[in-house]
Length: 454
Ligand code: UD1
Ligand code: MG
Image (cartoon, rainbow, N blue to C red; front, top):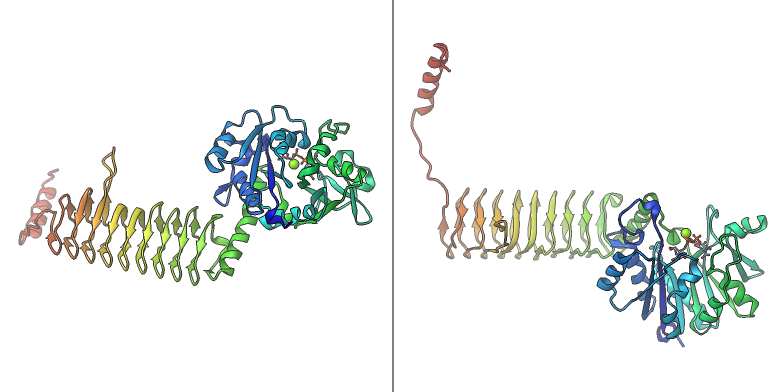
């Protein structure tokens, strides 16, 4: 049976107290690359073939259950009322284990960087007959980790730091915490775990020694330390972010995007940059951004939940908010904000504008300072600008309003009524010119000042 045809239950431990985060939010709901740590893990195990998910939460973690209900509604949530160790936490999902699976993956929600491929590698020995498969790594500093104790090549036990002998403490190969167990064996192994150890906890890691004692094969799979780093505080959160960003930037560049100064660009877990996209320094991509082939994102732009069509130009200093949708060849220039608006092919909004809840036709041009007034304090209204229309600088388009195709709006207009196709709309005061007024004014005022007038 191949991995893909084997059923797989993933049990994700999310009961960590996270007190060192000093946060109102549970630790595993903190974000890395624009997505909660818990979602990273749920996504990775799912990609590694887990077809059932169980999340074990602590007693006060309704917020985690809410997130699971919203983002992974098929996952079962189990509560660990009292923290009694990792094996105990896994057994809180007993009902899920009893339902049966070929493979069981145990993952920690505070270890968010493990790649789907690593989970798949961890599962692989089970298909070949292993009862337990352990993820190990060579620790730069092994302090605090469980050590992988081997006899020859065979893994015989995992010894927790507090229970380890000096010789065992000298071992550099450590337990990342993640484990895969044969579904047929998992319950029998876990039920045999006791709590006779330095912490008085039920250790998941004891499953290894128990399996070995029963003559069952145990496998070790390794991963780089960087990938299995856990997050307990804000410094480690920042380190995880850095690791993920480096990974995302490498992928973006491997996919054919140019990042002029990669370290200055912040990406999200789902950022899509097409071929020949150029991203200048200091741009931020929040979740939900797709940038298509040949587009240029100039420096200091901030994008979220938007589609940037092929060969478009964005920024510098542009902000694209959710629902911005730029068609091919469109230009959104400096100090322009676009929200929930479609900007048609070749349309231009070059400078200093706010365009929200709008439809901008192909090849339309919005002059500097054009503002859509889309909100009256209660409701939002739409603006539509027809194909090839030209809106003069510093115009306010008071929605709901429609500017017809090919129409002109005079600079400085406040447009409150629809403008027909090909018409000119002027919504501003008429200019008055008074010849000689300025010199008369100066003469009169300097006279008043001399005679002490105020
Ligand atoms: C664990 C491993 C250790 C490994 C290390 C890697 C055990 C006994 N030890 O140690 O070998 O090197 O992780 O980081 O498994 N949890 C619960 N309920 C509990 C206890 C823990 O949900 O009752 C969760 C925690 O929230 C955390 C994870 O399980 O996400 C690991 O628990 P933690 O206390 O951090 O274990 P370590 O001592 O770090
Ligand atoms: Mg830990």
